Length: 209
Image 1 (cartoon, rainbow, N blue to C red):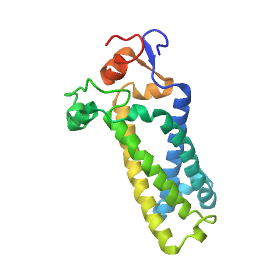
Image 2 (image 1 turned 45 degrees about the vertical axis):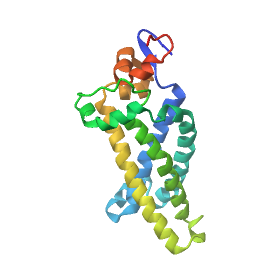
Image 3 (image 1 turned 60 degrees about the horizontal axis):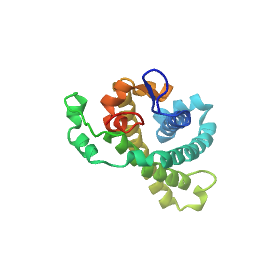
């Protein structure tokens, strides 16, 4: 688990590549989705070669998001299981943000990260299914008009929820010094691991409880 000096491997190369690929797909989906959602945002389509090409690429990127995310989720779901310490983290969330509370039982991921993960599991599935229902010209013609309208509404609502959740996730990663670097370089210092994820640190090979 230890790399060099006092650095600890937190995110292997494959995990980091998948994470950033999901992030890129998400950014594209948000921007292209906004362009199709309201005429005010249609100018964004110019970033992707115009409206016609953007409409072709948007659902393909949605499929790519599903293909990337769920195999990754299958690898990390055990680290995202809810623990008693996570309940305490949620109850003292504001104290944690003010650095007045520190959860000694936090594992590899804290409660906020786990909530983000478990919200994405169903939301991406719903976005995929509703996206299929409105995918022109392949699947939408075989779906009734009423169902397409309902699917479009659910798709927009879920996309907004995911956008807000990812926004909080990005802000928290920026706010927690060392988090972004860990997803770029893959490593964290022992001090960082011991402070932010003490239970995970204690369970690393060669670390004393």
